[in-house]
Structures are given as structure tokens and as C-alpha cells.
Length: 92
Image 1 (cartoon, rainbow, N blue to C red):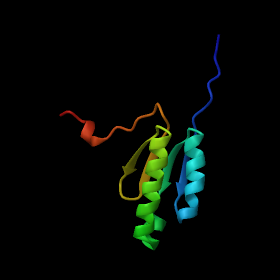
Image 2: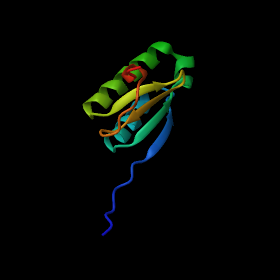
Image 3: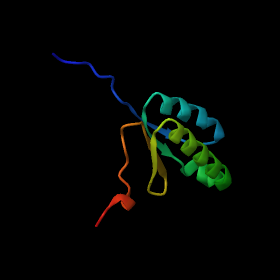
């Protein structure tokens, strides 16, 4: 017997301004994996970028999602049940 599992989608979004938070919030609620490109917003306004990232972090934590930076230009958000390996977890 085969069970049909709902797929988890991966979506790339470019953050251009604060209005993009609504889309990100809805996608986090849907359980998507998000790769957020922050370069255009960073080039435009670093303070706004900081506020947007803090708000996305807060939304992610509310939904039990995980969030981390991917280099200088991207942030990844994963749904509950998908954890991001971070360097500080490495027990060398």
C-alpha cells in the first residue's frame, strides 16, 4: 500500500522591500522551504534589511521553522521538522 504524502516545495524569493514579508509569511505558513535573496534590499537600505530579517526570523520561530544565512546574499527558511545544520553544531 502506497501512501500519498503532500510534497514540500522549495521556493526562491528576492527581497526588494518590506512588502515582500507578506509573501514570505504565507509561504512559511504553507511549510515551504524558502531561499531568500537579500542583495537588492541590502544595496538599497541596510537598516530596512535588518528590520525585514528580524521580522522574518520572528515569523519563522512562531511557526517552529528554522532559519539561517547561506553566505552573504541568501537566507534559508525551513519548515518544522526540517533542521538546518549550522557550524556551531559541529562537535569536532
